[in-house]
Image (cartoon, rainbow, N blue to C red; front, side, top):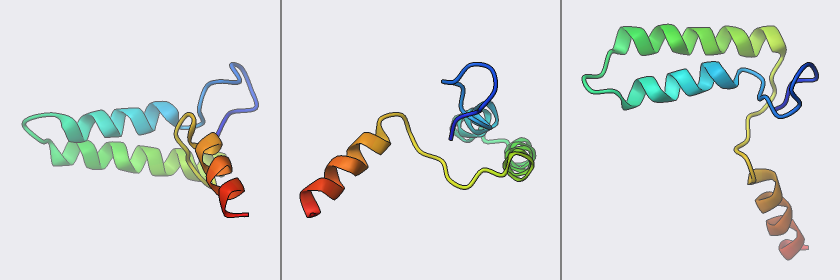
Length: 70
């Protein structure tokens, strides 16, 4: 989902999502830190009323798959 303000390519809650993903890849795994980041992402989602996330290029792939089914 993209923000309506500022840079149109900037994903809504993208920074929070990226921080959480990077947290879970760290060794040693810091569950408390990752849980705080998860809660931060959840709050961002609630604040900005995010309905769904998608990866770059995923929308195009889904469109192509739907066209093949039709």
